[in-house]
Length: 439
Image 1 (cartoon, rainbow, N blue to C red):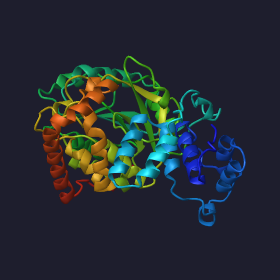
Image 2 (image 1 turned 90 degrees about the vertical axis):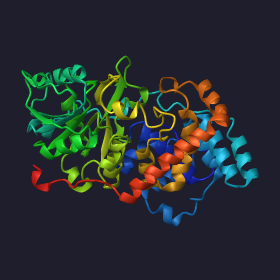
Image 3 (image 1 turned 30 degrees about the vertical axis):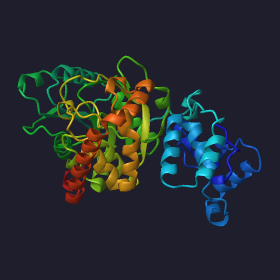
Image 4 (image 1 turned 90 degrees about the horizontal axis):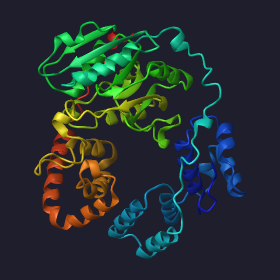
């Protein structure tokens, strides 16, 4: 990893270095380790960054942390899709920023090339002793409760349970909250697993996970979807990750069933996503965070909101490529029976866009201004069908079609905003964790 000395401020250099460090898997907190891997720039930039790491009070005594528009454009150009830069320029000009300053900074950034953060993957940044690490958690056979909500997916759930039977680690129970209609009781016979079954009449994903968590006996909770595939070391690798990094959450990596793990996820790094389809947490975490917010019921985003609560509560999450799983993406059943494939593309023309829970989350934690900017950026691209969302030419065509579609889109967004407002006025529906249930 190298430091870009072309930034005008120390703030710009540090932001660039920190962003690289995050994505390249530098998760050690010791200052000397950070210096070793990051300070390869030329003086005086190198010395300034060394001083920062050696003395955290440099922010208070060194008046170089000023906002620099040119640095902002440089940072975006180095790490993000160029389309985002055009979006930011448009937003800032429409916000009555100084057009001369904005356009000059934008033009100066045009020659900057986007860097590939994963050209050389970051596996080497993991200490060599990880493979030889003897986990105390595994040695004492700490109990894990595997939580699987399911809805009309017996054919896929069969594969998940089969994979759990083959786990190297044996100290676990499996809690299934079944909302299927029709319900098949015979399906659960003859499995070589410690199965605990909850039959739930209401088709509600948050409620299903909450009920399962409240009945869990394990010291750790492992979340799985009912349409994934895992290998035999999956549970052991989750526990080992939590133990090695002294973390509270091991956030497993997803990848499509026909592809391998993406380069961006091939290294251990600070967790930036919590997905209930593949994760392990200490049950102790629930004492402070509570359970899943039922304001997300039959919509989307409950796992992201839960992960954000964990982050704000100070818990440590590690993105774990060793505990990966194949995402089968079952075409039917599960949450797709209510909200389709994602949160931006409604099934009906007069349905809310985006799903109201997304605006509820955005407005609750980041405010209305951020939520509006998010809408400006995401709504035009959401016109493109889900299966074609990566095609740039379709995104351009979608942007052009806004001229004709804006009345329908405005109606959809207004409906979503109104429904999110009702959620915000009602407040979160987060049940407290029953502390007497903790092991």
